[in-house]
Amino acid sequence: MRSRIPFVFAHPARLLPRTCLALTLAVGAFATEVPAPGPDDWRLDAEEARLTIARLVEKNEKLVQENLELKKRITIVSDSFASAQAELDFKRADLDGGALGPPLAVATRVPRNLNDGRVADANPDLALVALDIGREHGVKAGMKFSLVRDGAWVGRVRILDVRARVSGALVEETKPGESPKAGDRLMIWKESHGSQSS
Figure 1 (cartoon, rainbow, N blue to C red):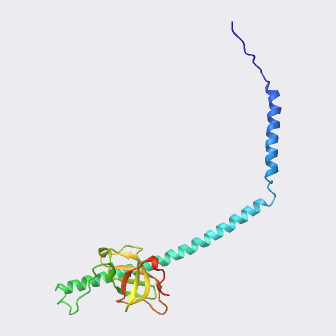
Figure 2 (figure 1 turned 30 degrees about the vertical axis):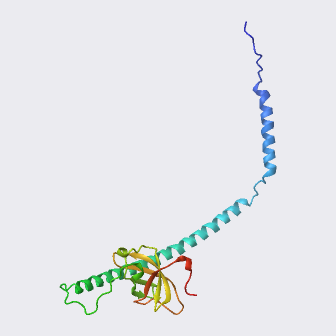
Figure 3 (figure 1 turned 45 degrees about the vertical axis):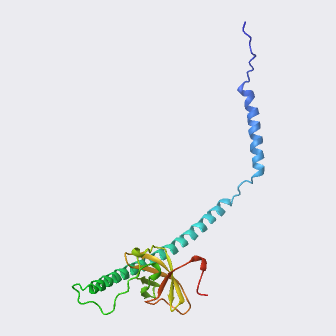
């Protein structure tokens, strides 16, 4: 004999009012915690968005101008490197007694390592210097060097472009009243020392 479990059937019409009442109570509780949007709220959101867009457009314009200025500087540095490389090749060929004539009376200085480098040329108007050390000496883009003249700190440069035997750098800081000159010695910049101009 089978035992029957009583089945209670609730008609949908009976459940609907209870469900609606529960939903109404839940929505009512939520509505009392969060204020309803006012008629001017959309205007505030639109104004905030307009101001944010204006700030971003202004920031973007500044970045575009900065980017163009840096591209100009890089082009000038690249041209200076090409000239320096050509001059260096000419001097080497001259020293080797090549087709360019007899060796020069004064030997060309050949740096051996990073701390043996010197400023080959300087352009104070553009805050750029060409250095006589390059990739063969371990120079990498982004490296920083102190400039030293007669044992005194003159400034700090950051490498922008690196070639085989020469590199170009941006002058980031100088001692007041000083500017880099050809012949200034290079020393690897140590961040822990901070500004040496003081």
